[in-house]
Image (cartoon, rainbow, N blue to C red):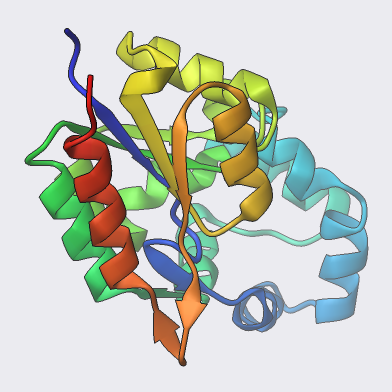
Amino acid sequence: MGTDVYFFDCDKTLYAYDFRKRLPALARLTGSSQYHLAATWWVGGFETAADEGEFRSSDEYLDAWREVTGTTLTLEQWQQARAAAMAPIPGAIAALRRASTLGTVSLLSNNPVPFRDSLPVLAPEVSDILQGNDLTSAVLGAEKPERRIYTRALGVYGVAPENAILFDDSAANVDGARAAGMHAWQFREIDGGYDVDGLNAAIDAFANRAR
């Protein structure tokens, strides 16, 4: 019997994320306007393309950024802007650590290659727990909730879908995981906070399920 795998999303699951803080930081660092960056890079579909794996390295991503926006962005600046939009959710990170004592834990996040390359800088607490199990959509070549990302992630660990669970804030991503035969649980904000108790209960229910 293989080890159970606990997949965790990052944004709005392990870390709070607010794009409204990231875009102003990018504008300041590049000397551009928020409108220009949003209209060229995001509205132009290039961040989605990056999430889907079109740019296979951080250098390719940053080269494309320069060509599309006409501004220069270093990896360190990309990290500064991304970090400005993130804040750890301590209870969720503690739950990730606890899950790591029950099986294999892995990230499963819709994000581009620079995010994966920058994880030790952006999320050192999580990076230490994951020990290199940092799957992103750019590496897997598909985004949640596409079926392919789940089957490819399962293939990385050689685990059957019934022996894996996804924790994610997106209902669509949770439904996608279930459609692929996995267990899944939606992480929600409640009463101005996060449902950490529900997260821990879901971890326990999966770990103690009948085989």
